[in-house]
Length: 163
Length: 427
Image (cartoon, rainbow over all chains, first blue to last red; front, side, top):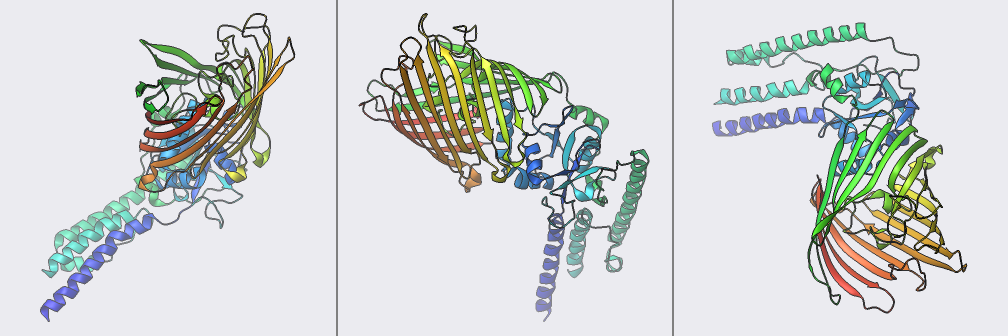
């Protein structure tokens, strides 16, 4: 009876351990919308997904004649980057790197997107640099930031495409 | 024994609770009473966690208040921002130095190199198998201001006993906006797709070599162009139209060369290229090009040249599809004789999903027909050929390629079989 009780208690504790370890992983994988944030003076408030793609592919390089687009993207392994590569670029990490090397090599763009290492950094840079655009987890967007509608929808609204 | 298991459970739950803060508001620990009954050190640890959580909440609140005080009032057109969550607490703060680092500086020269090493063996009579150094290519890009950029490309090509240094491209470009960018210098002529998509870095292209119709040193189309070029997007909504229009020296008296040091005659060449990248079919590009020049291969010999070309490509890799066609029309201005030569290629490739998508098999068929008596394209031979190969990406910046080719150059010539290997890289 004692050995049986020990077996049950160990199984229970092991199950709890597994759950405890998996809980944060599950929490991190939840679907949170990724906001498209631009510098507050950017003369635009709504883009279609195709237009966002055109901007991030470097095919549209100016918001207006005097305001160049400054692209920002999170460093590898960030969830925002995964969402951008999957939905916007539809490329793998290596295809993305090759794409920008080729883009610059063709003289179609002078520089690749700037890499930002945290959402906090992205928030600060997008506020400081005119023409900048970044993808930020919608929970981490600072108040007062300019969030673009994508296909007419804001993050959190049904049908928002970037998640 | 049981208390040890309990202790293990509590230690495993503690980091879990800390990690979970990124997605949920802090919760008071539920296991305090249980811990109190166990080890006192666990109790103190939980209290310490609680204190730290409270402190973080205070700091976040203070940070938010500061930002709210400093932030300008949002414009009417500004979309409402979602309420920030506590997940930002683990992010680093971007300092002013980070902002300065991210700002563009002028000029800021970037250099990228490309290289390749090749091996070939064929059953052609008189051919020698062996290794060959491919081109070493340096690409330079430097923004000179927000609207002015310089791009350059130089190549070192192995020759018996020496290396040839060549300026392949040298362009200074002024961007007015997306619809109008004007540049001056030496370009790859915007005829068709390949000539402006892959340039001299073998690593960029799927196959080992370029198609014959656009090969470097070839004469079927003018690969290089010296002059002025305007390019940009055409307002067209989802159609994604763009254009290139160029005006320059055209071919020199050596038809494979551009007129870098001056034109060979008093007549300028021009080129126009229009393409569409429809947003509905991301990856698709369709284009058409026209090129006009007057050739003077020898003093007193003048030929009018019209090149018309069309291309359709699907640039994604699952699958990749490239197809180009060009017609080269020559007219002797003295005799009014005309000649038309045609060339096309079709290339198919597919990035296999296994083994981290490193394998990419491909096939290309190419064809060239030239009238035998065309006095201008003397170095061009009729061609029918197939290439079957595979590319293996060793890393993000280097690849192995292996190819089998079966081709016939010239009329009534025997077919030649060959095996070709290349390692191509960028650095």
